[in-house]
Amino acid sequence: MLDFYSLILAVFVGVAAGYLGSLMVLEKMALVGDALSHVALPGLAIGITLHFYPPLGAFAFLFVSAIIIWQIQRVTKISFEALVGAMFTLALAIGILLYGDKLEDLEKAFFGDISQVTIITAPIAIGLCVVAIIFTKFIYNKLVLAMISEDLAIARGIKVARVNLLYLFLVSVVVAISIQIVGTLLVGFLVIVPAIAAKNLSTHMKRYSLLSSIFGAVAGFSGVLLWQVFNFGIPFPGPLVVFAGIAIFAVTIVMNWRLKITS
Amino acid sequence: MAENNDYVLKVTNLGVKLQNQVLLDHVSFNVKKGTTLAILGPNGAGKTVLFRTLLNRVPHTGSFEWSEKVKIGYVPQYVTASDVPMSVREFLSIGSGISVGEALHLVKLEDKNVADKRLGVLSGGQLRRVLIAWALKDNPNVLFLDEPTTGVDMDSEEPIYLMLNEIKKTQKITIFLITHDIHIIQEYADDLVALNKCVTFCGTAKDIGKPETQRIIYGEPVCVETIRGEA
Image (cartoon, rainbow over all chains, first blue to last red; front, top):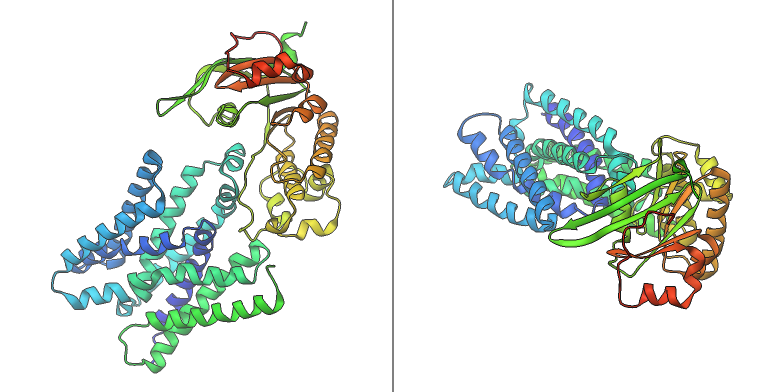
């Protein structure tokens, strides 16, 4: 029997991750987003151990880590990639320490735990995705402008540091929710692949962000649907979401190559 | 003698020090309204830092005073546009100000197809004009141009300066121009400030043609004391 809550949540998670991911890919921070997602591991472990909603713990760890990285980067000018790399391995070490011998829980954290999606949690998660999308829409152009030139943005009165912090906060929210569907190891996919697929077909920003959101939704929905129908002997839908997204990416490569859309 | 309200900017003993490095030291000059001030100096002389300081981005000592209601348009030297799937129309639609068509008309990009082109596929000259159009969108009365012909071939440089000169006159704008090009300074600037952390020369743009001026600017740097007169 189909679980509609999971399917609907997969669509919203896909839209939100695709939309926010479109900015991360432009910032050349795709792998930062991927690594950042692993920082959620200790938060999930604490949530499971103390019996509260694990994505809440994941969000807390993600956001606190993001602030620490943001602040260290401002003070030391060490690159985001290097700092996220350090924080990610630290979080992984803490996470594994916290899980101890509870390997089944660790597996859920790595690959997703769709059983957490219930009639109560799904609407909350969907609501948070919608809020994250709306807030990101407000800062989207500011972030793009700062990407083109920080000086340009600041000359127009944009508080670049604040906008970046808000963006990191929203990424933390979306990643924490996405972990339920694809787990910490595969959530980077939802941030990266829909965006690069959209980039293959886009000469305009509007189309790029729209396609990235649609591809994220299609990958999320079809991956979870395929898992629910065929199962393929795996306890989580993450890998099928990845396969669906990669199929979309492959099609866009061929389309771009044949139609010369971006050249 | 210039009246006090003829000046758009007065800079007095401006100093910038970041991470124990002196980037600007006792910089003083005045800029008259409606003129073009060329800022010249070797790499690392503090030219871009001066712009950023005047935009209130950098902590500093000393002071600078803008005339009332100054609105600054800024054209940075470098932008990262090649990888962004954004059209010229979308770029120029960000924020308030004049319409995309008007902005493109100002910089003489009349070809209707340009508006729908991706920023990344524009030629160097077209991109610089689009950036100038962006800076002009908000109806500024001061324009900061940080080497505005970076990435532009030599044949396309002169038309851009001619266009800027026309815009200066029609829009009544004061231009601050960072450039290394002596010919451009002589042809299109009114005044000149040479920087090497401190001000090493301050005078009219025509002075750049004199051998003694060039010796001062390109020889061993000797700081000029506080300048109170016209730049």
